[in-house]
Length: 228
Ligand code: ADP
Ligand code: MG
Image (cartoon, rainbow, N blue to C red; front, side):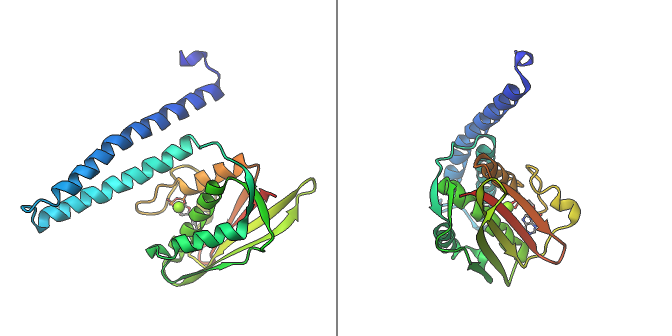
């Protein structure tokens, strides 16, 4: 049956099927996690049991996060493109992340001009910058800064916004820079490698582009070109 389908249709069918699969796995996973939380409350659970239960919970959480990210990557929701004040989106994101332990010691400078507007899906815009900021914070791993800057630019035919996220983190090896958009490429213990692949996909469906500049020990700059 599949042999009769065109390649693009086949890929779409595989995306559909794996999204469905990811969705089906999340339900029993939620049941496992819920049951373990209840059993952990039983009076006869000793310290050793509780430690084991917390491992089960941590790992089910991790699996759930992986499936959620994969689900979005395999089958992104249709964007609702609206004019957004980017400065506002970043400011909201900063307050959302203010209690996140990964951001401890990290200063975020929001230099986006007040008047700058991008045409983007609101949730997906937050998702893009959430991924970039968290990656930067993880590369900083301690004290450092993330500078988010933006300006209007023109690519010859149309107006666009050039937005950069620059960090003082560890940077990347040149061989890794080439692979950052590959799904499942990660150098982190417990990383999913779906963050930048998803960001790339979102930016692309909005008619934008993005590039990564990085050198080991010199930090990283991610530049996005988005429609205004
Ligand atoms: P994950 O964060 O789960 O590893 P991502 O797709 O978000 O997946 O990132 C892929 C890889 O790209 C990371 O594992 C890391 O090696 C590299 N990377 C991404 N952003 C940065 C950054 N700001 N500084 C250094 N390395 C980065
Ligand atoms: Mg990431």
